[in-house]
Image 1 (cartoon, rainbow, N blue to C red):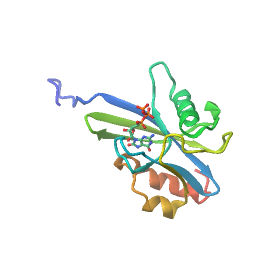
Image 2 (cartoon, helix red, strand yellow; image 1 turned 180 degrees about the vertical axis):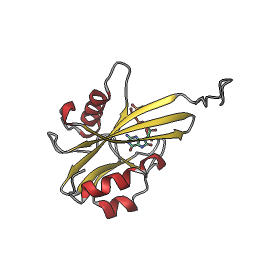
Image 3 (spheres, protein in one colour; image 1 turned 90 degrees about the horizontal axis):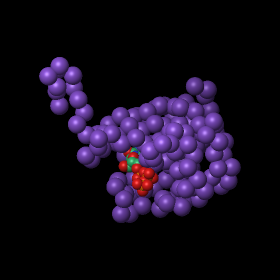
Image 4 (cartoon, rainbow, N blue to C red; image 1 turned 45 degrees about the vertical axis):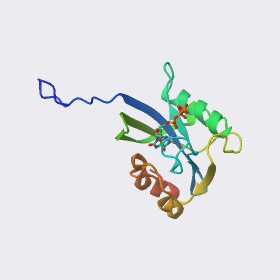
Length: 147
Ligand SMILES: Nc1nc2c([nH]c(=O)n2[C@@H]2O[C@H](COP(=O)(O)OP(=O)(O)OP(=O)(O)O)[C@@H](O)[C@H]2O)c(=O)[nH]1
């Protein structure tokens, strides 16, 4: 939509989502969205919507506890990159953090499956369109190169 001033305005309500690239030994953790949810069957990074009153880091620590049963220090979440894309009737802003340390062993509490994917495996998994640009950002991290 274009306003009288010529500024392009986004009519869709914004959906603010946080997600984590949990990296261990050259692999990143991904989870498969369960049946009955939007984008079912696709593989994504654990995370979810920021609730009112939460910081992005607190929201992500909460989601990782709820979804995987792991304890995360919000200070260990390092901003990595983001995506901005239409998603159904909303506009998704997806903040991706890098995480190298957590307590506990991730288990699939919400997802239908978890996988520790190296770069080759990640490229083969079907992912939501907003996530696809993340792969090139992750490639050097999974090769163990500092960024
Ligand atoms: N967690 C996560 N969500 C993603 C990714 N990529 C992507 O497009 N999304 C979208 O972002 C939205 C996140 O919503 P969600 O349903 O997972 O959030 P949530 O855990 O708070 O769900 P809830 O409404 O059941 O509490 C979904 O529409 C999901 O498809 C990703 O890599 N990780």
